[in-house]
Structure formats: structure tokens, C-alpha cells
Amino acid sequence: MKETIRELAQRLHADVVAYRRHLHQYPELSFQEEKTAQYIASLLREWGVEHHTGIAGTGIVALVRGKNPRKRTVALRADMDALPIQEANTAPYRSQNDGVMHACGHDVHTATLLGAVRILHTLRNQFSGTVKCLFQPGEEKLPGGASLLIEAGALENPRPAAIFGEHVYTALPAGVVGFRVGDYMASADEIYVTVKGRGGHAAMPHECIDPIVISAQIVLALQQIASRYADPAVPTVLTFGKIASDGGATNVIPNCVHLEGTFRTMNETWRAEAHRRMKKMAEAIAKSMGGACEFTIVKGYPVLHNHVQLTRRARAWAVELLGKDRVVDLPIRMTAEDFAYYSQILPACFYRLGTGNIERGITAPVHTNRFDIDEAALETGMALMAWLALCELQYDGSDAMP
Image 1: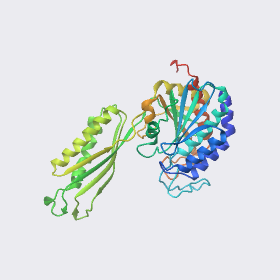
Image 2: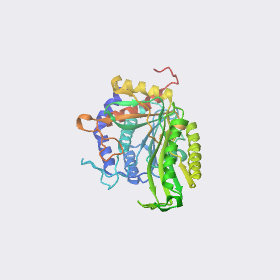
Image 3: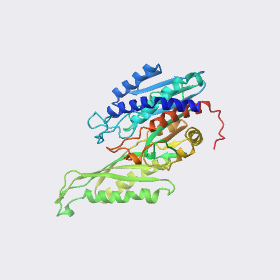
Image 4: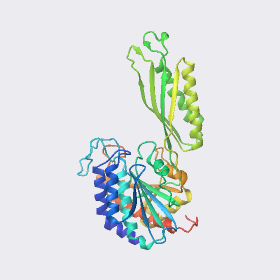
């Protein structure tokens, strides 16, 4: 089976490159992936693969049923949405949609899952069980398409025993993949703060309540949340990326200041405690200085936890397929992913697909207008997705893995 998957991935590579380039040319923003979904559905129909459309808006669930399809189910997931970025690349497959770009590699994820579907559909008479393939909308925008697919019942009837997902990574060369056991990616919350004072002439601050000074105190004090209240063993990041006042000038103290930031950590219990502490501290500082503070936290994606035994199995299977020198271990990341929602309710494994090529200058990171990939990675991506699904379908329940 392993050699067959390799051969099929090699044979399908040109087709999957074409899928990826089409998707890259016609990117769509989160929860607006109508044409993307139509394109995916058209391919699934052409191949005769059972699928359901309109899940949580534009989501698609495809089912590749092998022999005895009720025996066991494994899920594979790809996200479909793009980012509001104007592409600067000049490749013939550059984005044709102004101000929208697949700068996070979701075109790669979707294309490799399409390739995996073709491999699995070709081999459907050679394995038992069902592979449920999720083409998910809206990873880049809260509340996250993963949460909406879950609410819509995409993980039921049949319910998977495990789920796998991949993400591009230009820091790894094409053909290399990376795994991390346990907690891998951080939770991510949005913070919105409005500090209210009383404006006036900058030369007469004693007649005012300066919200800029109050805001400065709040920003500095809140750093204690990470440096003095968080357990040093729990990664924690608090960053304010935007500060703006209502009016104000060199000689004008404004009435209000607005702060926007992000809070990230790797522990859900501490996450809740930190929320409480931040709000209490900011409000107390504003009050003590004669002002007021409205502190709002918009909860984002939770901690992404890679199931220990499943991820160890997946890493071992990746070595078996690709070779020991093409599988590496990864450090934790303070970025966030809505795949985390799946990891909260199912054994999950989220791994990295190397897409870089230093010699060819393919090094731009995700979320930049120069992002691109070495398309050799597509062969690795589709082969590994199909291989992991089949290995997990055949897994007998023993955890005696390296």
C-alpha cells in the first residue's frame, strides 16, 4: 500500500499542481468561499465521490467509503479561505482577485486534500472503513469555520475516531514534515479597551483627566500578567498592537483612547484566570486616576492539543513513508489555529508540511504578499494525508508505538 500511495501521488502531482494554481488564482475571503466550494464540488462529482455541500455555509464534507465502511472512520481537514492581502508575486498563477490572496497556504491544504481524496478513492476496495474529508470555510476569521462545522454536525454520522490536519511551513524545505506531541499552538483572544477621561488644553493638564497617561499605565501594568502572574512554565504573550485616541493633537488632550491587542497562552485554566486579572487591573488603574475603562475580551481559538499517542503514531508512520531524514520535531508556536476546536473533542494531530526552497528564493513567510511554495511539496502533502488516514483506519488500538 505504501508504494502504491507513493506512485499515485507522483502520477497525480501535475493535476494537484493545477488544482492549487486554480485556487490560488481565485481566492475568496472567510465565509465567502462560494466559487471555491463550487470548484471542489465539481471535482468530487467528476470523480464520483460522495459529498455534501452547504455545511455551515460553504463547507463540504466528502466521504470515501472503503470495504465495511462502518468499521472505523478517520477525518482529514483542509481550510479554504484566503486573506485580505494584495499579492506582489508575478507568477502566472498569481491572484486575479484584487486585494485577496492565498497568503496562508490554504490553497495548498485544499489541493493536497483533493489529491488525497483521489488516492483514497482509487484504493477504496483495498481498505476497510471510511475517510471523512472536511473542506472547511473561515479559518482566518472568528468564530472559526471549525466551530461552525462542529455545530452543524460535520463530525457525526459517522463520527471519526481521529482527525488529521496539515499547515504549510516555509521554514522547512519541501518534502520535509514536522510534528509536535501535546500542546502545540496557543489560544488567541482579542482585547479591546476604551479608556475614558476628560479632554482639554494640553497646557492645562490639571483641568483634565488624561486618558493617554492612563492608557500608558494600563499597557505597562498589564505586562505583569505575563511576567509576574503567569507560571513561568506556561507560555504567555500579551501584545497591544493598536493605540488610537478620539481626536487629540500636540496641544489637545483627548476624551478617549482605544487600545487593541491579543492575549495568547497554552493553558486553558490560566487563560480564564488571566482574563479576570487583566480586566480587574485595567479598571482599577483607570478608576484610581480619575477615569474609567471598558475592557472587552473576545475569546478566540482555544489551545491546539495534539493527542499524544495519535501524534506519536503519525510521526512514526510519516518516517515509514518519507524516511527518517524527512521528519522533524517542532517547537511550540504562539500562533493560533481553529483546528484547535477539533482537538478539544477528538484525538487530533496537526502537523507542518514543508514548502520552502532556499535555493529558489521561496522563503517568504505566511501572511505576507510574497508568500509562495515549492510545489514539489504537494506530492508529499497528498501522499502523507492519504497514508495517515489508512494507517489510522488499520490501527488496532495498541499504543506500543515509538
